[in-house]
Length: 94
Image (tube, rainbow, N blue to C red; front, side, top):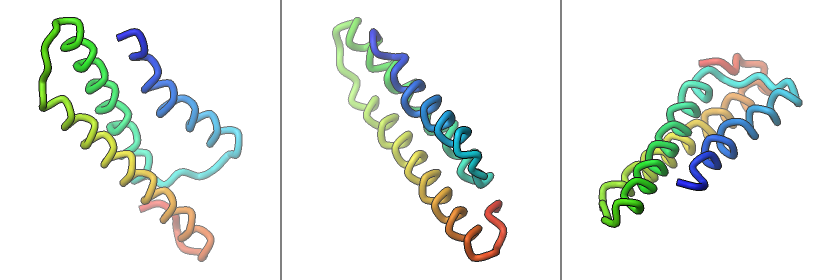
């Protein structure tokens, strides 16, 4: 629970600030997958902290890490695809 703020800070604010500084055009699909991915990882981290405080284990908390990681990976791949397509002269938004 002490480090709960790190997940949204590192996965949400830092990439957003980097992209704003470069004034990069982010594809719509990337934006629509990145936020839920960060939120899923944040909820998983919060639940893990709650279960640690309570003193028990919950094997299904790992599902949050897998789902959040899959969403972030899909967002990153769609963002890279959008940047590559923008270089070809095609539209980057989906």
